[in-house]
Length: 329
Image (cartoon, rainbow, N blue to C red; front, side, top):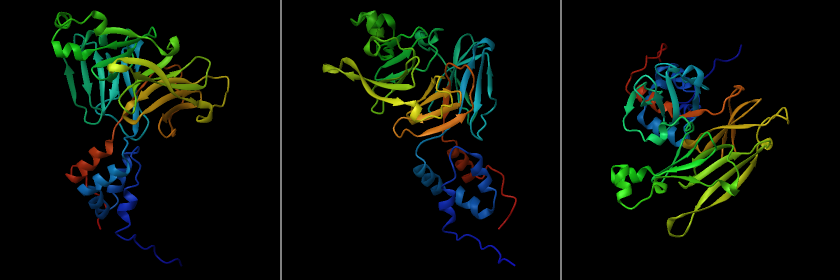
């Protein structure tokens, strides 16, 4: 007869629990429900700090995509996380998703915008959104660099909107009265090497500058560009940061099928690429690849939702807002 299993030493358990994956929030709940000693370990305030230090980057918990014909914005979970209160947002159009929040245009609220927290379900209406962001041609996330928003329109043009000038001078006429031209407020930025942008997303670089991620037609190579700053702080020229051969990173079962760049997750410096083999997140610094979900068919772009949801769970455990474990020790 085999000897009975011996309990784990108390000093070993925290090290094991710290390695629970942040992209599976349900694992925190399951571990806390094992016994009182595990719950006490996880509910300790110091545990949350150690957990965050070991997992500094928030995971991609899902993504939003717009079903334009139905006027529905749908949240698709890629982990055990489920949003509050619902996944579908009818009569809404998602424009952006970052810092744990989603930004919608609300068709039923006289054209207002709404910020939604998928973790708590809280919503806040946003007044006085710049007109340039309400245009139908602006359908992809913008990048904020300095006092300017950079936007890629459906036509493939890269626009610079200096929102900071309007905030500084209170109104459009105030900006013109200060000696600025209309082109100083809204202007077109020439793309790299004079090429049409095509399958491209604008993003900020790691050092806070302006960048582009571009996947040219009939190609498996992803190009990353950075906008150099010229003398006196003026914008200079585009510089190719690097090229990534997606055939070396992604499982591509059919060489004739072309990958599609469908999203950017600035919070973790990553891009999202879709192939017939699935949807993948590529971290640009490490070139690490993670599969989000299976193939989605024809989807132009998605908005990845990045959040350290486990922080909320650990806070609830620390405040005893979650049910107690069924087994006592």
